[in-house]
Amino acid sequence: MFLSGYDLFIQNSFFVADGMVALVVDPTDGALGWFVTKDKNVSEPIRSSVEPANSSSGSVQGAAGSAARTSNSSRVASVAIAALIAFLLGALGGYLYSSQSQDSTAAVADGSADTQALLTDQQTQLREGEKKVSQLESDLEASNGSISTLTQQLTESKDAVAGTYVIVAGDTLSSIAEDKLGDSSAWSRIYNYLSNEQIIGPLEKGAGIPGSAVGQTIKIPQG
Image (cartoon, rainbow, N blue to C red; front, side):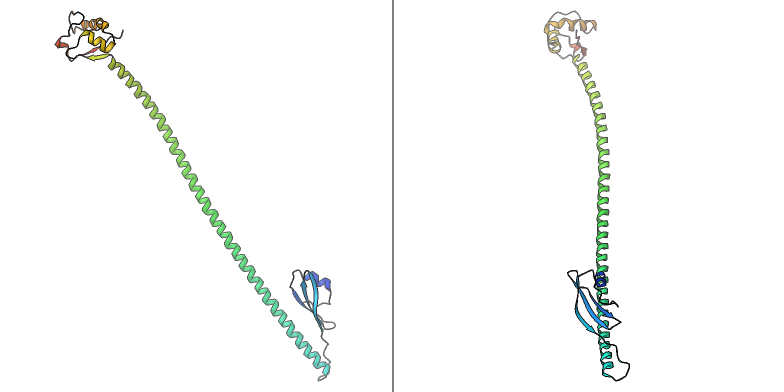
């Protein structure tokens, strides 16, 4: 409600949304008008006039003025109530929107917290996995070193085994030379060793090895 004249400039300054309604009363002449905004323009669909009541009691003019004032007061009260209801509805709508926004913000915050917790857990698992991989690599390097050592020992053992021979019954110098040296004519090398070790006495090629030598381990000369 604006206690002013019918100044459209003032109305345009206050009416900023379509559908807004105002009851304007000019206290100087009792003019009464309703204004409404539509398409950003202010129009005056209803206008009436309220004449001041005559000071003499019982006159027709005074009664008419009193009736008009009573009617205008009712209209003003109705407009005030409507304005109050509109204000309350607007406040309620604002409260609901604010609550919804807060709920949405809280939900987003909870979702962000859950996502951050999940990422942190995944990062922890990744670091643990990297540690396990590093440990496995170290173990593998150590195993490779052990394998290399075992391979060398095995090779040495094979070489040692290859240079020895256990005499069995029926062996001859030629058969031992053929089996261990791949050349039966190298029997003399076997003989020289056995003779030097006093395992056998003077023998000739093809001669049998005495039974007393069976079961003994002898070294095979390699050169």
